[in-house]
Length: 115
Image (cartoon, rainbow, N blue to C red; front, side, top):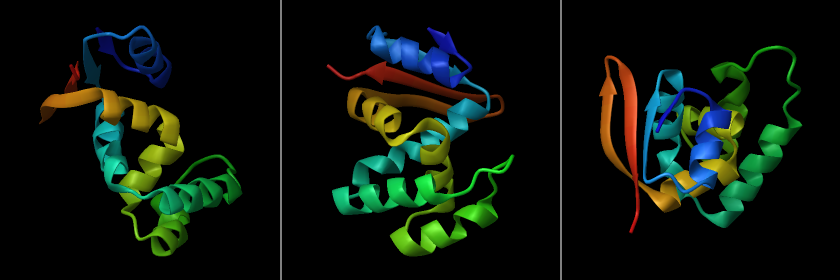
């Protein structure tokens, strides 16, 4: 199944799609979020709280995430992925799927359901 949006990705995961092809900027966000597997519970709680405390006034920028990066010790790319996709979705992706292929041109990520 080919997906381009967060809602399409959520649907693909919810129905148990065996292979998901993510295209566009979403592919990069999901790939940046793969480090969620290595983050401890305390750090995830701190991250969720810090993201929830950000006043969203139109757009999210890396500058706004710098204090969170300092607090949690995480990369800004991961923090932005979590802010966009959510901890639950990223955890479901990386606990349930393996990365098969990734390319920059065009942006494309292929995931296959773990057996």
